[in-house]
Amino acid sequence: MRERPDILCIGSVLWDIIGRTDLPMAAGNDKPGRITRLPGGVALNIAMTCVGQGLRPSLLSVVGDDAAGTALLVECARMGIEVDHVLVDHDLPTDQYMAIEAQGNLLAALADAHSLETAGARILEPLENGRLASADAPWVGPMAIDGNLTLELLTRIAASPLFAHADLRLAPASPGKAERLRPFLSHPGATIYVNAEEAGLIAEADTQCAETGAEALLDAGARRVLVTDGGRLAVDATPERTLSLAPPQITPRRITGAGDTFMAAHIAAEIRGDAPEAALAHALETAATYVAG
Image 1 (cartoon, one colour):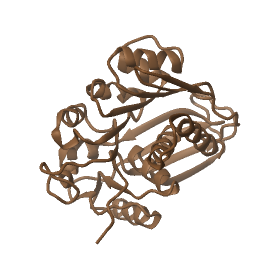
Image 2: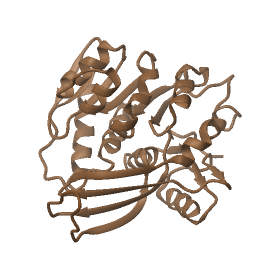
Image 3: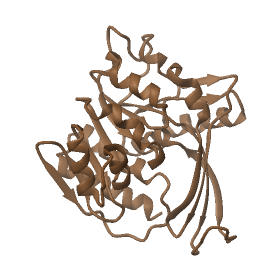
Image 4: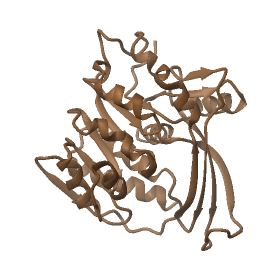
């Protein structure tokens, strides 16, 4: 019998296609670099970091019944991520993400997560049918949920008794999807992880840094937020207290997945019982190591 997972990671599971160059680059440029394909997606990025932090994550997502989906599940299982509850859909292709980075900065990206959006609430069936939880015994423990889910499904999750006792950790996936997290602003069990720009989009406020971003989200009703701002201060704030720490100074070599790495490392530190300041410091150090390549 399998052990109970330490955390459920709910959202995008896909192949990342990332082009990186150490040269300066502008729109329309053609520069030498490296192109890689590797497992990605917010939920999977979080799960991979959780494994590195000594946790047992389980994925709730969808892949296609195709070569890409089969290879992705095999690779996840090889890394120690539980994939027993991932929906395999015969009619949908496996999602993918494409990005171009130059000198550690993201120039452009496209997320093709249409299969996840189409699958909708079907990916959550293990939380209802007793495989992971049920209406009579809802999940109690951490859940990482990303904004690649539709606004309709996220709104349903925020109001559902199936999630009422969980420790919900929310990531927006990108600034373009940040507003989808608004249903969780007043959820008593939600912790929202965003950067300063995403904080402003959710709170509909002018946020210039992590401090103003955290303040705007708390004013909008959030119970707890962690707001980052690149190489500047990061903030962990609740209505009762605010912690601020500067990340280690490094030369960035990559950026895709940095926020997911920060979030997963922070969750892992809190699961271990670290105090808030220690957990924030650990998350910043882990993300800095990742970004430095």
